Amino acid sequence: MSGVGKTTAARALARRHDLRLYSFDAHQFEHAAQLPPERRTLDEIWVDTTPEELADWFEERCRERVPLVLDDLRAIDDEAPIFVDGPQALPELVAPLLPSRDHALYVVATREMQEPLVRARGSGVASKVRDPERAVANRLGRDEELVRRLRTSAAALGLPVIEVSDLTETLQAIQRHFQPLLVDWIDGPHGDVSARRRDENDARLRQWRFFMDSLGTEPTGEIDLACECDRPGCELLVLSGLPEAEAARERDELLLSSDH
Image 1 (cartoon, helix red, strand yellow):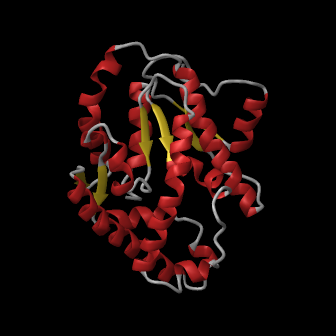
Image 2 (tube, helix red, strand yellow):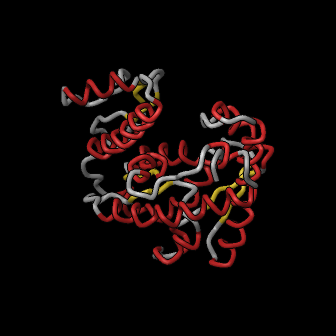
Image 3 (cartoon, one colour):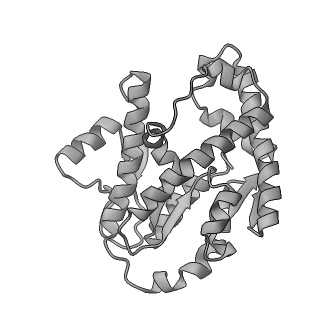
C-alpha cells in the first residue's frame, strides 16, 4: 500500500543486510516507455472517475508492468537476495513466483494513518487538475478499495498481510518477517556491496531525470542516496541534488558519505 513507509523501510533493510533492492517506483518511467501510452487527460483520470475505476486501472497497469519487472530481475547478476518493493506486486501476480508464502509480505494501514502522508507527499497531480480536492479524495478512495481487494486476494492465496498504525512499525515488521529467510546470507560473505548500492542509486537518479525531463524543468532539491562505500552493513546516507550526482557519475566517482 502506498504511504505506509514500506519503501523507506525496504531501503533501510537492504542497506543493513547488503541486499539487492529493486523498487517498482524507481523504474516507473523506464517501463512507461515500453507500455501503451495513456491517452486520457489528468482530469479524466483523477477527477472524472470513481475510486473503483481507478483501482481497476491501477491493477490493469500492474499486470502490464510485472512482465517487465521480471525481465529486469532475470537480468540481475548478483549473489545477493533481491528485495522487491512496490504496491504493484499484486498477490495473484506474485503468488505463483514464490518458493514459499513467507517470501512475501503486504503492509497496509488505516486511512487515518495514510491520508496525512499522502497529502504531505503530494504527487504533482493535484496542482494540474481542475478539482484538486476531488482528485485527492479519489486517490485515497482508490487506495481503500485496493486494500480491500488485497486483503481478499492475499487471504485466498495464504499470503501474509500486516496492518501498521504508525510509520515506526513498518521497518520493525518487515525485519521481523524476513529475518528468518536471511540467516544464511547474513552469516556469509556479501560480495560487492558498493556496486549494489551504486545500482540502487542509479535507478533512482534515472527516475528523477526522467521525471524532470517530462516536466520540462530543471531539477531542484536533494534526496538521500545510499553511501556507495564497500563496508558491509553501511547505512549512511549521501544528500545530493541531481546535477551534482550526475556530475559525479560523469567523473566515475562514487557517492560517499562525509561521515566516513
